[in-house]
Image (cartoon, rainbow, N blue to C red; front, side, top):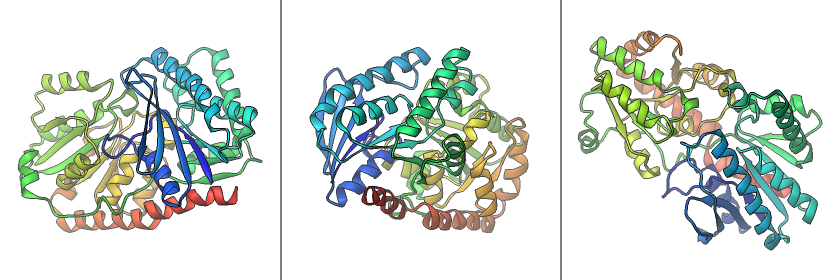
Length: 392
């Protein structure tokens, strides 16, 4: 069987960033399927390489988290055009698997289906266009309606839809009730991340000896609302709590947040450069609580953030500042806490009882790991994903 995967933001473990599409492609390749990925990179030339049995084609289409809405949109359109030019080489594939975001990848999948009679599966990681509309990036009413129409058209044209969260699945089923959907959330790599004692040499490296460490690892963009993370650091400093904050990543808000931290003399906050999966595992080793942060916008509560699953696999207490399915899950399984996004002092209220209670910390971490193994194991979800193609 031959599978064509369309994902503009395909990453490898060595490169870093979200690597869900790598996990999916690797699962297919490990089952002796022929896997072709069309992605993009910021280099000036087209490139192709073999990544662990996966044939990866890199289109020269620049993209950066720092891009504004117009620059991002142009990048998305250029990627679709590049896919359609390249897809002519792969008319013999059995299925196309298109990964959103952006929503525009569905345009390429629909055109490939029309031209070459190749059915496609459509994966929805974030609800577009609802996300950019709620965040205020798309304000024109007629453009909004055109995007909603495109979204519905893509859903109807897809053979199957894969949702990354229960909230996303429920929303899609309301929009296209006659369409089959599957829930395959992001994965916890329980063979790579695992609970372990803090390594003294890493505590020295990150200068967090004797501290309760709260880490944010991921994109540093507008949607993440990381001013709140800084406010939690300010509140902790005011109370003289033995808490140190680590922020690892890159994005449009990085420079501004660094300036703000310097202005407020947040010596209990360290910014770390974007790193790959090995670097993330190091940071997880010295981490006591993994913080997942978003702006208080309802659509952002529906997502399936990679950092949640890395934290679970690492056996870490989880802190979230948004409602929705993740809040409900971590409270049900007692592996974390919710903090009010409008009240940084609520972070102190929630974290203070944990600081002096090692047993509670260990129990939350154990519960997190059990949840990862039970519901989000990479092995289990990879099998479920591959079964999609066997069923057709």
